[in-house]
Image 1 (spheres, one colour):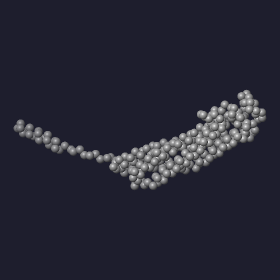
Image 2 (cartoon, rainbow, N blue to C red):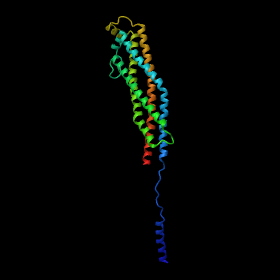
Image 3 (cartoon, rainbow, N blue to C red):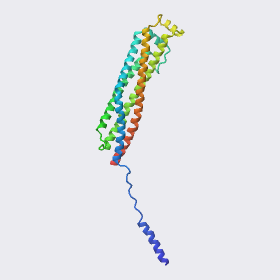
Image 4 (tube, one colour):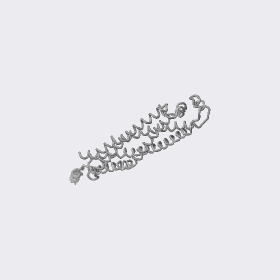
Length: 265
């Protein structure tokens, strides 16, 4: 009896070893097809924002043209009116940064406008390229390599061009603020009769009152500056908001497409 129980115990142990479950290879819970769909969806979000921006580009180009026209008028006003020019030279006007004279302020803004025009053209080119390449993709047949290629382009080119344009516009905004501030100071100086201004006028030989026409030019120019500045800051805000959408969705598209490429190896 004792030997029988021992035999049954040993048999039970060996039976447990032989019937132990064999671990199976765990299958991936996500496949390349689904990863491609995720990547495509994120690129689609970028394309949607770019199309919306494209519709507003014409109005932005018009506002930039008007700003350039205002800067030219600003420059001509100083050249044509000795009294306005002298007021600008001798008033303690708060210029921006290293800009210390009206001439430098005009030159700086004109230079920024030229740089912004180039940055805007480059951004339009990369935006159109992205949209054209995205239109070639098909949701159901787009490969991981195709999605990855467009995501990389967006990451290395589109985002870079968007950032360059945003920086250029901020520089113009700073110059425009300084110009509007200058106009305000000059406008107040032409209207006031305080001791400093009178002494300054006498010093530069301004015996006569400034003409109503010159005063009107200053007010008109400042109004144009404020209008342009408002439109400019709106565009900067839109670019910053769009940039956030681009960065998030392009980064996601890159991750998903690169994972899909790894799974396909």
